[in-house]
Length: 132
Image (cartoon, rainbow, N blue to C red; front, top):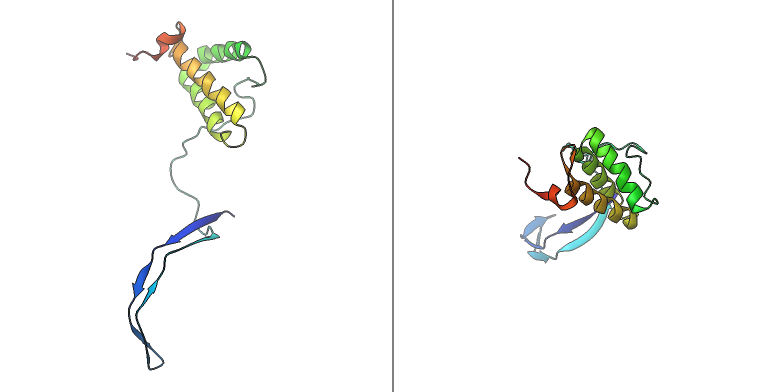
């Protein structure tokens, strides 16, 4: 299980009695420490789409032109938004572990976004225009 960083603010503890004796007020300083995460799994909305291995049909060791060709055919078939969301999900999931792949996936997503209006292919920069 993961560790979480706990930060506790400093505060002044009031005077109190312990075993009939007075314990004077004291300032407790702030502190940071790592503790085992005891929280339950989040109930929030799942933001990343489910990815199956090879669902894009693209290997990122391929040349850029070949990848673009495959992604364009896929965007014509299933739609621009789904291809872009899968590419961005790949980029997010690989951001820390494989930054080269993440950069390629993000660049490909930008290329597809600029080349399509829904399932209709348009010249590259015109895809960024406002969709009506």
